[in-house]
Length: 125
Image 1 (cartoon, rainbow, N blue to C red):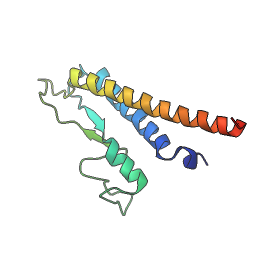
Image 2 (image 1 turned 90 degrees about the vertical axis):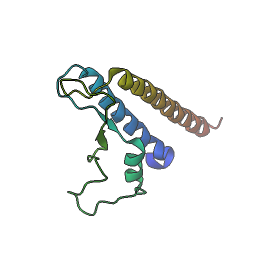
Image 3 (image 1 turned 90 degrees about the horizontal axis):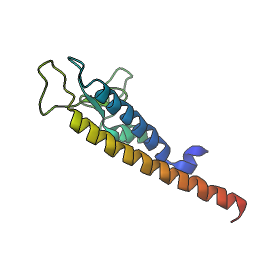
Image 4 (image 1 turned 60 degrees about the vertical axis):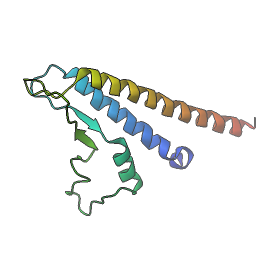
């Protein structure tokens, strides 16, 4: 029933939360030698969940897309790799995290507005 009420937005909120986790892991490991930065390809993962993706897996062991893991994480290609092999670029990761936080909050506000509208409709307002 909740899928009908919230549609795609519930899945989008969950994906945005997972992307923020990945980005925060990157920021936390900015000084870890050999750490490889990752990101979540939001559009690709959401299209997989909706069944509209360009590639379909016909077996559970198949990759979902080029360079993608099962959860949509991809390694980021750095502009400047550190000498110790770390690919986290702290300024870029912080900017990505800030943008992701704003997008998450916007989706959350949208869902909250929808819940409020349903509550008012049920009360007959």
